[in-house]
Length: 328
Image (cartoon, rainbow, N blue to C red; front, side, top):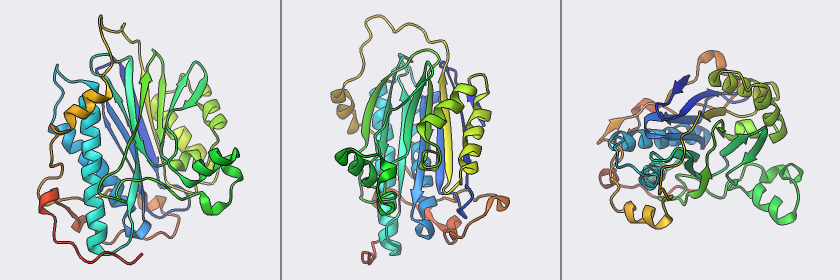
């Protein structure tokens, strides 16, 4: 599905269960009116990876809904709301997994936020190995750095991630829901007219090398964004489709000059606003049912989370009493 933003950006996304998995644990969210774009990749299989990723996007949707855009909006405010929404989801996920004694469940997250006062400025926040890329003038650049064991070892040893043993390939060093709060890495971005941003789960990047992604973006310059997103997913499936795959594309149109006397927000500005962010994201006892994959797309053996429609979100101060911690 594709949406044209009223503020210089067009966006689209596509997601697929892949060829090996039974359920889709990815989730994504586009809020063009807020200048917010997000992809999350759940982990936990039967333990509820689908719930974890959906908790993130549901929390973000709720917190931005409660804070509709105004003329006073700033990029720092958007970053603060994003951090707050993700961390309240992290708290809910951790409590849920502890209370149900189902072991660890969690999710990656990568978000892109555009400055409401200057579309030539943006920032990303992320945890895990879902990625943000920028495609500009025929060159593809990875903006985020994976929080994974394989990325850390590859950097330390000076080797390519693909050359390392398989046992390191799926270990994350940071994710939403493993603890009650999660540190999100921030990257500040300069945006130029025509820039194309790609947010994706690792179902794309484990199937296609960066050079392959780059070539498909090059040949798809005149392709509508929704069709281009689907083409990338089809390519990942053709390469094996070993995981769920989600692709979100955000393209900058013709951008105006930066406002006179404009300066970007500082980290201090963002930190000062954290205390002002809403403390409750999820409505009291709001029933939450993750979307289920189309039956025709089921190919693997990973079982669905049992009765997801019965799972309820609670505000942080009204969650049920915790059960003994799970045996890991």
